[in-house]
Amino acid sequence: MPVTRRRRSARAAVPGALLATVSAALAGAFCAAPAGAAEPPPPAAAGTAEPRPPAGTEPQPPTADQGLLLTVSGDRNTWIRGVRLSCPDIYGRHPHARAACAALTWARGDLDALPGEPHACNKQYNPVTVSVTGTWRGGPVEWHREFANACMLDSATGPVFRF
Image (cartoon, rainbow, N blue to C red):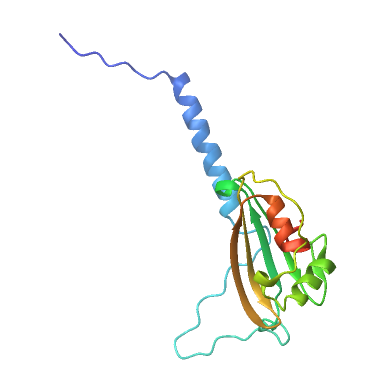
């Protein structure tokens, strides 16, 4: 018995062709250089010096205190929030920056020594994980802890993680 092959209709091929065309157009749009961008300069010939950037545009070394990045995540990393906090120059998006900086100053940057604001919490287990990375008064900080729930976090750390 002869084997018959079914031909794909031209109608079925149109979505595939359309998808390929749209994908190529999007790839070109997102991968192409911005309009008006110049071609990159050719590599320098061997033995010649690299051109230097104009004065005042060289990258600057980081300052001694870049601040702290505070993050809070829920059970199994279901959500993550984070803010940057810099003390004593209060800037960033921490909603209680002054109080958080005061607590960190009181603890001399030791997050295990934060004064907290003790209050009653239930014993429901809904863990939250917090982390702090950055610099405090020129020294590196890397701190991670898990608390049984958000209330216990707030009780132990006070305003530092209230964001």
